[in-house]
Length: 469
Image (cartoon, rainbow, N blue to C red; front, side, top):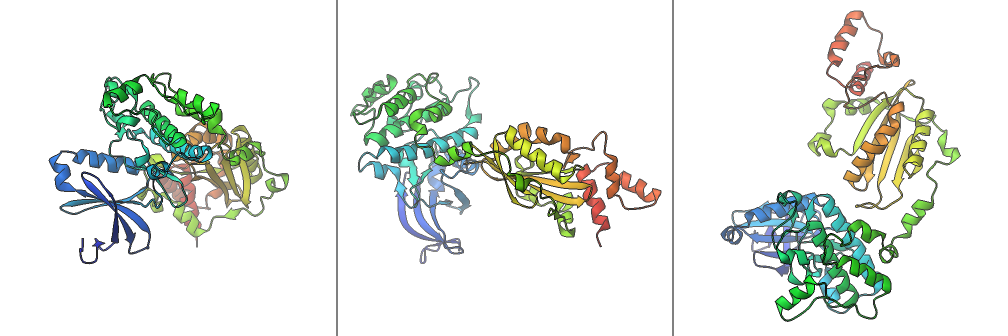
């Protein structure tokens, strides 16, 4: 780092100190290229080497790259020198949630908003096999729009950290927020332990103080073990019932995140958007359903870009997390559209027409990363063949993949000739020949040999390429 100008690696201008711990300091910084505000966590390599926590730092990096969510601090990049490691992260302008609670209890609506966002973030972490293990107001930040951002994954564990009994065994966290089973040191479910911490945080938001507090640590642990706490008189009956279900000392009977989301107090704060989605019809208006005359034709560049040899997506994402899929169909466009409408109705999705041949599916229930949104676009390959591209435009990728595998793909199968990447169908349609240009038997035999190792969609794209001027 250039100490004269406080410029880090010619990329970031460092500003004021935001906070510090035993092994790291966090600075406000600004990107010299974009002007974006960021927070940079500076870790001393010598210190972490002496105490042997390098593996913990590596795990934190892996976890932060795994949990990308609107309510979780985003890790932009990691840089290093001989003496320092730099985490370049999202800057949360609003500071710690702790500072807001330190001024006194929050209104029920504000507390509910933060609790919603916290539960959504924690649910997303658990869906990725990540357990935070140190949830507390000091590790929850607020952005400029007063939205919550979970931070500090230094004590987090991955599902693979479980022992043969399926439990975690490392005792960690902040005493006042730690679940009873963590204190007992007999192994614990990371998800259930995080839920307990969320309950303590909710109590703090609504009351302005901790549910379990004592000047004597062992006395505090005793209270935690028996879930010995008292709700103040201003708590509503619904909030009391929810807290009793979350702060249950028995992890087996403790409320799960799914049960928390079902409770009346939690639902009071659900956006009306979901209610609107539930009420809306899941079919297209009649006037939108039949206009198939303006479908997009694939031009030469489109066809070439769809060919596997020119597919650059594998440079940016793993095949298992692909957010788009394509298939070819010999059905008329009107039949394809009718099938999409039928699919939306069966899967309780809202479907709307955005443009000729472009249809948008939207989930009616909020998922782990908001509402799932999927585009399906129909293109004309030839008058007899259509290409349909299906891709996720928003929402959680794992939720999309599950919906695609279990719902979308099976439901569309009777109009699909072949999905891109699939092996040659056992009974290919004779309409495939309509794409073949007139050629000699020798040329057709050569085509046949070339196609043996190609999927059907790829074959048709290559055949179309050969016809391009």
